[in-house]
Length: 334
Image (cartoon, rainbow, N blue to C red):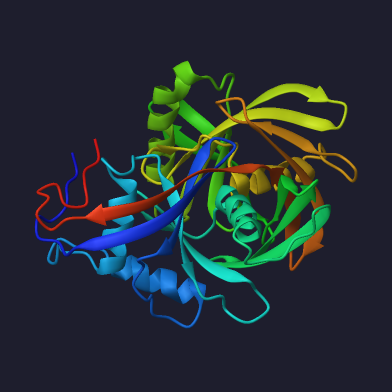
C-alpha cells in the first residue's frame, strides 16, 4: 500500500469528470496552484521534478493535488485526469497536463476527446447546434485537435486528430516469462509497443498486466515506453480491420477505453502493413466492449496523420477537500 505524508495543508479542488468509452477523465477546473513554465511541455517537466523523492518525500503542491485525485478514497488506481494550463500561444484554446496515479503522461487521446466535449459543454468554445466545433489543445507532445460533432444541440461524437505517429521498430523480440514476444514500436505522442495475442478478455487481464510490466521493463533504456497494446484480430468489417485491445500503461494501469493515442499507433502500423488504405477505417474495441473508429489522414513531417473518433459523457462535478487533520492525507493505493 502506498500512502502519503501525514503533514499536509488544507486543499479544496473542483473537478468536472467525464468518461470516454469507459475510461475516466477528471478535469481540474479550480484549486490548482500556478504551474511555472513557458510551454505545456516545460510545465510537465517541472511537474515531474516536483514529485516527492527519497531524500525529500514531501511532494510539491501540484503533485499533492494529483495524489489526492488518483488515490483512494477520492479516486482509484485506474483514475486519469488533466490539469488545465495556459496554451503555448493564442492559436490554441487551452493547454493540459495529463496525470495518472504514477505521474504525468505526454499524450492522452481519450482525455483529448473528453476535453473537446468539456470545452463545448462549458462554453469555452462556441459550437453550433448542428455542425462541428474545432477545439485546439496544447499537450506535452504538441498541438492536437478535437472535432466536436453536434446534432440537435447535443454532442454526438468527438474526433481526435493527433500529432504525427512515427514507427520506431517492427518485429522487435522481447524475452518474457511467457516466452519471446514480437513487438512493434510506434510513437504517437507517447511510445507504445503493440503485441498480437489470441484473446483479449477480462479473464486474461491479470496475465496481460504482468506481461505488460515485463515488456516495459525489458525495453527500459532503449525507449521511453509508455504503454503496451495487446491486440486481437477480429473478422474485418466492410469498412476495414476490426480489433479488440487492452492497453497496459504506466505501472500496470489498464485502459478501459480502446486507448486514443494507442489507436493512433495501431493505425500507423496497419497502414504500413497495407491493411488500412484510403477510405478504410479501423474498428477498435476495448476490453469492456466500447469502440473507437480510426482512419489515416495522410502524412506530415515523416509521420502518419490519424483521426480517432469516440464519445465522452459527463459523469459528475466534484469539490474534493483535504483536511490537515485527516491521518490518511492524500490517500492510498492498494
